[in-house]
Length: 545
Image (cartoon, rainbow, N blue to C red; front, side, top):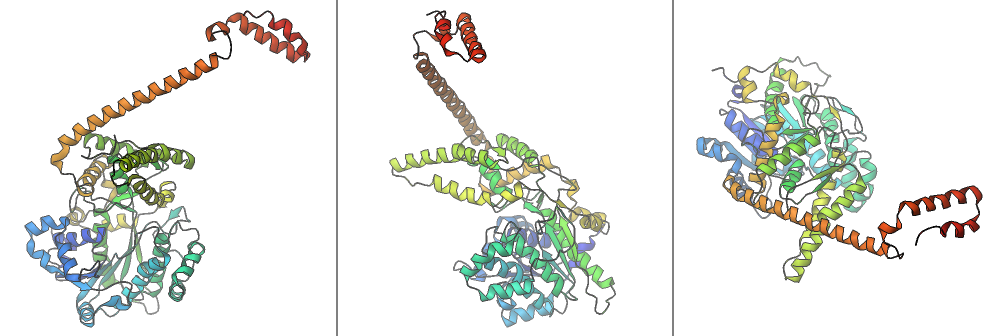
């Protein structure tokens, strides 16, 4: 069997990873340990949180479900994980002198995926994590004795004032260094007051600060061998580490889970636009391959004094190579939910798409808030906790952060990943797959729904028979409710008709005879021609009583 050049490159190497406890970080750690078994050690930057020290967090991290197969099949690999206490918002990441020296002496490859991904994050926090963090990383990297490659994880969704985004670093609207200095000297209230003006046309602080970070890296990286990977909307795994694995409600996952529960029933979205989603295993494999390629290219390059190295940018997106519209996503996903429902559903799953704000608000009022207020009223009367309106308020706020991305479309040029494939052997293409043209959307969306069911909603596959029975009951309830509503509608219309009919002595059928209609028409025509109202008594006298 042909050996993997990428796996061979990582043999004996120590890798430093920021953001390892995040969604992409976990998948990266698992992939390195499983597909690059010769890797020496993985240093993971972790900060104490929620009263837990780094040792406790590392224990929880290793026990995560994503590492279950690795723990069972290759338990020794887990011993290669080393947690170092630190925080990307501190100078030098807040590392102890001992840990800092350890990193300087041993690290060969760096993956920087630490960031806040909250779209509505405070600008001050977003700058500290997404802009200052990468700057502090560069300072640490400059002293690494064995450094061969740094891979920075950005996002395809920056510089969204352009319709087409190439694999280049675009000029920033403000000097990132001056912004850091400005943010540092202002209190939180003042920063909030000027946020809208600073962010400008960017939809949120996340995309704004990620674009600034790229500009800063280009200016300050110097001779550091650095590359940037820009994923689009990262979703559940297609194949690895587990089919459908996902551990958060970010992006479409919240929508997928909410629809399956019957909780989300309307969504503001242009259904004909391309939804540029990419399964998490694709950008992770690309990152590992980019680390290898950057190191190889760095060895071959002739350093020319005074000329900075070019930073290669890799857009990892599907929109141009394997497009999927939001309508396709909805219809395929909905069909899978009907075949594989979740156990506890609020109502029979259904969801409408509209790009009209007014229609969406009406849909929300009828489909979301009307049932929510009814359920809360019942809860209040029975002494139970009132929660449904509050849950919908929170859900609508989270969904509203996605509005801009669901009603606009961009063309992400993604040629560099395709070119990189030419450097890979057949073995590496199979092990570290990242060719998005090979994704079968019909199969993948089924995997995505199954993953949301299992890993987000916590439904074991063994619960499917009970879930399908429950779905049938909800369908019958839905049809019964529809019958009741139609009956009420016809009763109301019948009542209104009776009221209208009572205005005259004649019944509706008697009143609207051909003779009466003829006389009414004649009266109207005479009035138009003569403008004389005096003729009315003569005309009306001919109408039968």
